[in-house]
Image 1 (cartoon, one colour):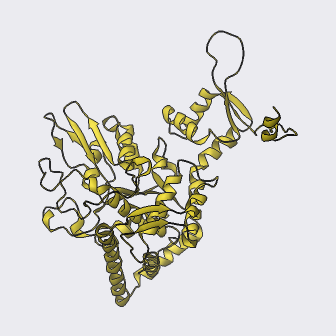
Image 2 (cartoon, helix red, strand yellow):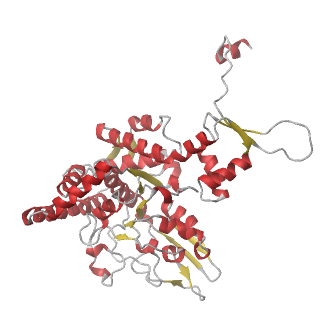
Amino acid sequence: MDIFDAVQKYADANHYVDVADKLPVFICSIGAHILNTLNKCNQCPFKPEDNEDGYAIYDCPMRHEHQSIYTPMSHVADTRLHLLMRGAKGSGKNVLIDLFLREGTGLLYNTNAVINVLDAQHREAGFPTDIGPNSITEAGMFGSVDEEGNITGRPLARDMCGGFLGFEEFSSVTDASKKDHSMDMKNQLLTSTDSGRVNKRMRSGIVRYLTKYTIWAGTQPGRFELESGLDRRFFIIEIGMSPEKERAYKQAQVLNSNMDIGTRVRLAQQNLEIRTWFTTRLIDAISNPPSRLLFDASLEEWLMQGDVRSHEADLFRRLAIGYHMMQPEWKGGQTMTVTVDDRLKALLDASLLMRREVMDADVQLIKTTFWGTEMPRSTLLKEVSRMVTMGDYQSAKRWVDDNLRGQRWYEEYRPEGVGRGRRGVMVKIQPPAPKEHTELEWGESDVKQ
């Protein structure tokens, strides 16, 4: 089965609208999640016999003893591809999350794969899946301790280890970090979505564990907030809305309402076949993993283009890994060469275009607002804080460093002059000064000197 074609046909038969360029990204995220399982679940410290704190995962189908196969810079890499969909209300963000994670009908849903089940001994192979709450605290997400130092409750990040966690509105998580009881939410979110590490040293005890959950979330443009490093953790999917798309949604509702029983039965069978394929691919990968991961020059060439920021390259590399993990025929026990074929190139190009449209919108706002001006850097930071980072001055500093420094039209300098006191840093936002041309190239000049 070509899983990319199978999921698209299933979506077409269910009259999904405007998903052809988005479904492959979800499938690649699943593939990247499986590779992360191969690479990191051999390090899982939670054994079935160690159940004193209630955190053990009985008979976890993802635990294995294979060696890690992807270790750049001598570190065991994390390859999870977290997804964030940005779109207006009613644009279809939740539809895509429901397609894969909805209880009972989701393409990844497995009744017996839920972590927090009472009869854990009867779990079957599969991914834990859940759609997160509309309101959550930092303690509810990552855990806390009581006065005696015992971990209280069951943190969602720990329960969902190895699974897929959806949020219909991601601001329910990011907004919590602005409240006194959840000030550490953002820091824990950063580390848990990157290395998987949760480490909190509290007055009464320590909350420390590793988790390997993948987040899929949606957010509205007005609530879009991915500063402070979160933009480096999430792959961006832009979902547009138009009058034509609105009419297409209405037509799809009519077609789905009038679907005959025979079609519904066939779709239920397709749903089961796709679920089985995902589970089988997980089992095959763990049972017979690749011996090595090798990146072809074609991928590195694509990543070297100027539109791909250095901190984004690994996100696209993970997309390519996921794509190859989900190919029709599984070939374990040998080198997996990640190369760029026509379909992957089209997916990479479309994904890069979406990311640039979303992530560069604020850059363009600052550029056009202050074009041709010169001001103290502190003044610019106040404006960025007001216009981009929701009033967070420290986040504004990081945003400027990540997004403005390196732009040809942005310059920072310390003015010369004589006087008492510290001279502040100034910035210019204007066309770059033309380079001085000489008759000799650098190499010739250097030789003559």
